[in-house]
Image 1 (cartoon, one colour):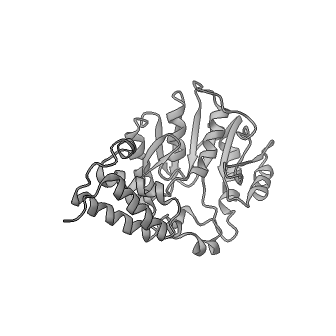
Image 2 (cartoon, rainbow, N blue to C red):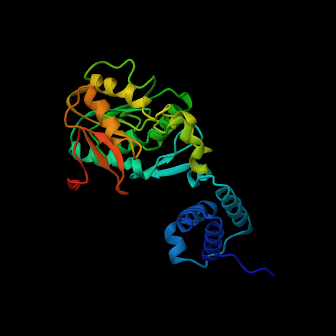
Image 3 (cartoon, rainbow, N blue to C red):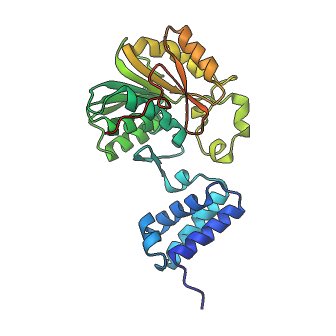
Length: 294
């Protein structure tokens, strides 16, 4: 008679397999996959570790671990990903949101008071992550997300509806800010493609094989999107407004120069929690300004 599989034994077994497969963060990945396979919560695993796992659940879990060992990201296996304080559906048509991008949220929280009314646009919105995370935190704000991918916009619209934010979030298929009037927005955000074309082949399989190439390829030097964005953001941003764009860790000086050439003053490069250049903005630096408590 085979030994009964429990939550804790399934977790430890999966963790060991992922560790042997040289997967980053095997413990967290194993827990997330176990939660999805069994319907257990994180608290269940901690407080009821010897709960039995059914044969069907164990089979699902085994399939999940096999997919992760083939370097499929957890967010793709589960079809969802946490970002800031919200949960988003993700599909192969959108970039899986990353913690690095939350640096843009840090800037937005400093730039706009908790009950301040303001308008924003998220250029190349993908899953809607940046727009929806800001709107979830700022109940008087409204905004629009643009993308050239109809499939991505469908995901963003579904995420907005799931979060009850569809009344304050609109989505439009257009290239960057095409069609919007001058001085339309208080806050402009974007996480554009910034990987140099020739570097894509060397990315981790989780990114290279599972994120849409449209959301990665920044042209020969990785900077093409910023050349397009800088004058457009200058055009649509209200006087005194704030912009924030994500960058590659080695692109700070070049992107800062492009925005200064477009006419912006007070442009800075902000570091992420890993102490790497991550966002170019004319807003406050969250690393030198404490974020106000709600």
